[in-house]
Structure formats: C-alpha cells, structure tokens
Amino acid sequence: MRKLIRRYRSLPIRARLAMLVAAAVAFAVAAVSVTCWFIVQGKLYDQLDDDLQKSLRGTSQPDQLQYTLYNCTDTPATNPLLQDRYSQAVTEDGKVCLFGGASGRIKVTQADKTEIKGLENKLYFRNGVDQQGNELRVLTRPLLPTSTSNGGRGPNVGVMVALPLRNTEKTLNDLALILLLVSGVGVVGAGAAGLAVARAGLRPVDKLTEAVEHVARTEDLTIRIPVEDDSEDEIARLSRSFNSMTASLASSRELQQQLIADAGHELRTPLTSLRTNIELLTRSEETGRPIPPADRKALLASVKAQMTELASLIGDLQELSRSEGQHGERVQVVPLLDTVEAALRRARLRGPELTITADLEPWYVRAEPSALERAVVNVLDNAVKFSPEAGTVEVRLADGVLTVRDHGPGIPEDELPHVFDRFWRSPSARALPGSGLGLSIVARTVQQAGGEVTLTPAEGGGTVATVRLPGAPKPPPETP
Image 1 (spheres, helix red, strand yellow):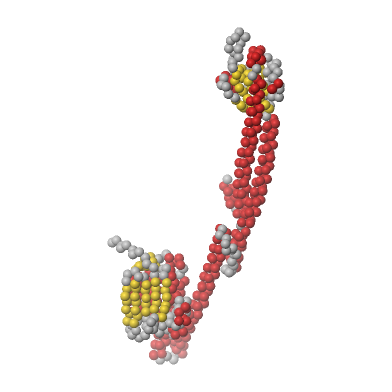
Image 2 (tube, helix red, strand yellow; image 1 turned 180 degrees about the horizontal axis):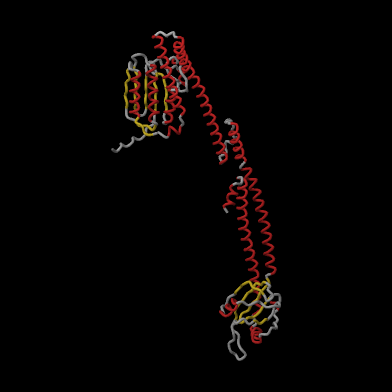
C-alpha cells in the first residue's frame, strides 16, 4: 500500500487530477448503477409477486383441494389458471400434492413448513428452485386445516405457486452488462476529460514553472507572467505573487548594484587621499629627506581624518545592508525621551561652541534601540554641522513629534526631494566631512518604526527636521 502511495505521489499533478476525477466518477457511476439495478430487480420481483397473487384466486376450490389432499396422489388436478406456472398443495409435514400447473414440483424448505404450521393468514414470498434446480419465485399461503374421511381434523395445509425466474434473471443480467459497459465508458471518458481539464487548468502553472526555471537558469528578473486584471482565482493570485516577487528581487538587485557603485565611488576619494599621504610619508623615509614637522603633522592629521571617514562610511554601509528581518528581531518598546537625551549628550560634545536647547516630554515607541539612537544622533549631527559658530540648535519632543531646528544656511527648495537619497550630498556640503548616508539611515529607521521624517526650510533661515513616531504602551516597571 505504501509503495502504491509513493508511486501515486511521484506522478505529475495533471495525472493525479485525472485519476482523482476518474475515481470520483467511477464511484458515482457505480453507486447509480447498483441503485438502478436493485430498483429494476425490485420492480420485476413486484410484478412477479402480483402475478403469483392473482394465481391464488384459482386455488379457492375447497372440494377439489380436500379431495386432492385426502387422496394425495402424484396425479395433478386440472386448474386452467395455473397451466403456465408451478402449483402445489403442501401439508405442514412437507407432504406435497400437485393439483395443476406446470410439470414438476417446487422444492419445499423448512421455512415453508414453518409458515404453513403457523397458520397465519399472510403471504410468504421467496426465491426457490424446483426438483431440477431451476430458479423460481415462490409464493406460499397457509389455508384452513383439512378434514379426514371420518370428519376429523387433518394437518395444516398451504398452497404454493411459483413462476420461473429464467426471463427475469436474463433481464437483470442484460441490465447489469449494459450498466457495466456504460460505467466503463463513463469512467474512461471522465478520465480523459479530467486529463484535458487538468492540462487546461494547469497551463498557467506550466507557464509559471517555465518562468521560474528561466529565472533560475538565466537570473533574468525582468520576466513577467501575463494575468488578466479581473481574474481572482488561485492561479491568478499565484501569478501576481510571482510577478511581485520578481519585481521586488529586481528592485533589490538594482538597489544593491547602485549601493555598490555609490560605495565604490565614495570610497575612492578617501582611499586616494589616504594612499597619497602614505606614499609621501614612505617616500620621505626612503629618500632620507624628512618632511617639515608642520607638514608631517598635517599629513598625519589628514591620514587620521581619512581613516575616521572610512570607518564611518563602512559603519553606515553595514547599517544599510542589514535586512528587515534582522531589524525586526530586536524591536522593543523604547523610551524616546532617554534616546534623545543620550543623543543630545553626544551632540554637545561634537559642538561645544553651540547652544543646544531641549524641551522634551516622555514618549514610548516600538523600535530597535541602537538604530533609533543612531537616527536621532544623525539628525542632531546635521544640525550641529550646518549651524554657524555660536549658533543655537532647538530640540523639542512633544506627542511623538521630534523637531530639530538649526540656524544654518538652510536647504534650497530644489534639493529637498534628494536629501534622503543614498550618498547624495548638497554641492555646498561636499567640502564638509560625511558620507551622504546619514539621512538615508534616518529615513530607513523611522520608516521601520512606522513613522515619517521630513526636512523643511525654517522661518528666518535654517532647517527644521521633523520626526513623527507612533506611540507604544508604556512597559510595566521591572520587579526587583
């Protein structure tokens, strides 16, 4: 059985569907055929039983019946109503006296004797045989007890009449053969129809399979499966899901390639500068011509700055390369007030000459703590970097809205749509340190937390960064 199941599971799905359809049709046809056969059999037997009941009307001749039973010879009496069928009178002990009808005797069973002995005024039908083994439909009916020659009471008597079942059985056999042939044709036709329907229904699956194999073979993610707009069946949904998946993969690959290209471009400048400075220092050592102390100090400071810029760029690239699932694993309820205060401490160290004011209210959000803090630090760093000397940075947190306002040169209107693009830097800011990834990291972190971030020009000059984050229930206090 297990071997058959394994073999069935190894078949193509269209073959399995055709087999299932054929099996279902075979079961239905078999049930209908068997039901039809039994209904016809019942109707034919009812007809025979009606004929046998009519035959009993020809046996109500008490004088002849008494004479026949009293003498009980094997010479049948004449009865015109029973010339085409079997008829006989039987005593309760099984003694048979023929009194008309077809030649031959009905084989008496113990059930017949029991019915006659019980003397209940009812009809008893059964299938039986004659002495030659021919099949019969038999009707037995008990009669009044017989009388002896001296007027005493004789044994209980019953009348048995029967009709041959030869024609009836032939009709049923012919019907069974016809039903069998019709069932076989129906099952074969259902199997063929099921195979055709399976092929037609699975044609979109074949196209999907070919598309997947094509993608696996060529890595071509531009392939799409045509789907009707108004189709809502399972195949259409599967095709739409495949198209969405390939589109997402293509977009992800494009973003990956763009990230690699942009990263390579951004890494080229600090690496070139770093290599140049190191070559100068190396050549000075090899030639024995020392570099003046001031120049040497400037070179070493430049090397250090370039190393810091490379480390920052690599850290930003690692942050951007982390998948959505990696972020989701560390999401928790975070007190945004504590995060902003920690970022403010770092910002004040980077801009000690600036005045940073803060008006903060408690607020809780669902986010990754380290990523959220980095995003807030990036927003404050931008404000510190573009603020004038002895300038002011105003920070406010109320109802889940964090605003950071600086009094710097501001951002031109035509550059605002690009501020969150990866590696994009304003022409006026390209001389300043930075990788162009800070605001991209901010936008990604805020979006993952379900919020939004915007940059707008401030009245009187400068820029306002606005971060909106949905709230989360305050976590219960930890028990000691």
